[in-house]
Amino acid sequence: MKNGIELTLARRLAWKQPGQKRVSAAVGVAIAGVALSILVMLLSVAIMRGFKNEVRQSVFSLSDAITLTGYDDEENPAPFPMSEPMAAITLPQGVKAEGHTSISSILKTPDDFLAVSLEGNNAIPADSLNSLFLSRQQASVLNLSVGDKIPAYFFIDNRLRVRALRVDSIYSTTISEHDREVAYCSPLLPGRLRNLPDGYVQTIGFSNVNPDDVKSLAAELHSQLLTAYYSGRLSGAYALTDIYQTDSQFFSWLNLIDTNVIVILILMSIVAAVTLISSLFIIILERVKTIGLLKALGAPNRMIRHVFMLMAERLVCRGLLWGNLLALIIIAIQHFTHIIPLDPASYYVDHVPVNLSLGWFIGINLGALILSWLILILPAITIARISPAQTMRYE
Image 1 (cartoon, rainbow, N blue to C red):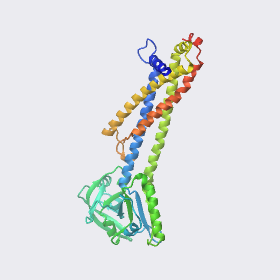
Image 2: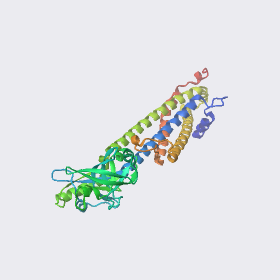
Image 3: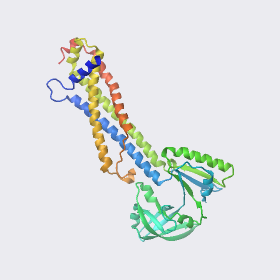
Image 4: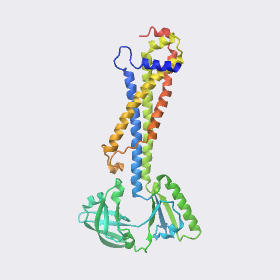
């Protein structure tokens, strides 16, 4: 019964003074402050999640989740038969293993040249030994197009070798460092140039690994290799590195984004808190006579305090409604139209990516409601200090 009276009073008092056609400035500012805060929070989280998903997918599509490298007796990287370490390990179902070879090369045209890492790619037919896949960035520097031929120079055993390659494809990614440094060729070409025996590779890459399982799988494979090495089943030592080590610069950048978002969430919470506290103080001052009348009629401080907190929570809900609506509209527009572009050379994506999960959406709104209720206790306490006799003289 008491709660019903409090709700009725909160609705009747609303946010307008008698005779006013519009809500007071304090109410408008409070609603706008809450709406702006929730808008910025939702957009920040959506952009953070979008960046992490897009950049992580790009990095995992270009690099192996785990890389195995062989070493000689002097602890220098050395080619090895792919079958040897593969016989010593057991891979989880679905994980793929591919042997890789690469060689440094200089691509030269009459007007320019470019140093690249020429990597064998299984997407290129093995018998297409003269096939070359360049990035759009590399093709632009060398002024090449599909079908053009270009001499590639290799320094092998202190000797210069040259081979004519044909540009069969031009690719493009959002990772500018990769596009600048890596070109692709037949998987057999680097081995042939290095005179490697059949079946020998420089590295083995393990892909199709869940990002959350990379470190645990790397540790398990390392343990299996150590066991095989000490039991004499391996002729040499092997090292494992995961993608979080080889491409640490990308993941460090993503972790920095997490920190920035946390700072934004804290700042927006402070902005909303200050706005709510100030607005409720003003609303209380505007309703001093009403408070005095309720006290004169015998209403306890707790009841009056609850009435004003319910009024303020209605205000918070109105702000949340507008903030959520605007945030969802902006997120939907950006998701479907990519209207806000970015420079891939700086941000590794060509547009602002957005991704807002239901859990984050509910969590931010629920957190805002709980936090606002706790914050509103402070100004509501001042109601106990208001004297009915003093309110009669208040103008």
